[in-house]
Length: 124
Image (cartoon, rainbow, N blue to C red; front, side, top):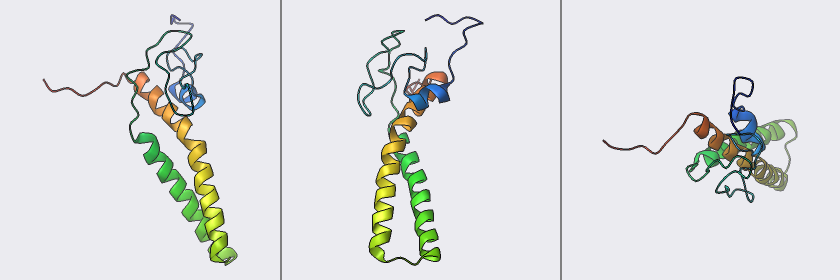
């Protein structure tokens, strides 16, 4: 797909969070839950250079930890539940949030890499 003045590049945030091709916004970025396709089926953009490394895991842990700890403190101050309730709520929330956030964040980081033309660092 060629870009013109009337056809600007898609937003990296929108395409990344939806798991779409950062070049055209139409093709799929993932072939499984977290596996990145080799190329876009619509525009042919090569995805082999996309490497989000530990970025999505860091953001998922940070966001999930903040929410789970905040929820645990609020529950303890408000209701003083037994420990098993804390474990059940915190465990469910941590697993659910982690699974819900990891794919969109991985797509977002790949799209931002594409938009900023990020490449492997090299020595001269």
